[in-house]
Amino acid sequence: MQLSPGITLGQALKAGNVVGTGGEAKVLIQAGEVRVNGEVETRRGLKLREGDVVEVGDERLEVR
Image 1 (tube, rainbow, N blue to C red):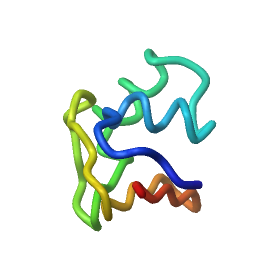
Image 2: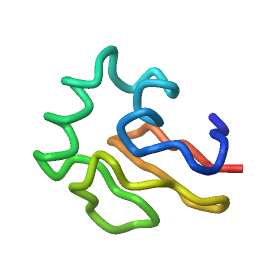
Image 3: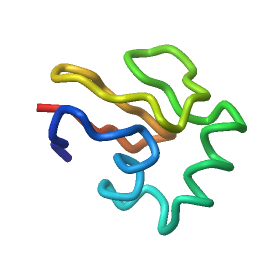
């Protein structure tokens, strides 16, 4: 799925249907289950930029 630049990591997980709520996104991120550009990311409010790739398990989201 493609996402717009400037979206936060938590919002991206919701928009990409990886989670249903912000609370679920928070838990997943804090558990170290989310990678941004191949690195574990624990900041839910991280602003994503064009070219960033978010991965959770088999799910892959691209910012364009």
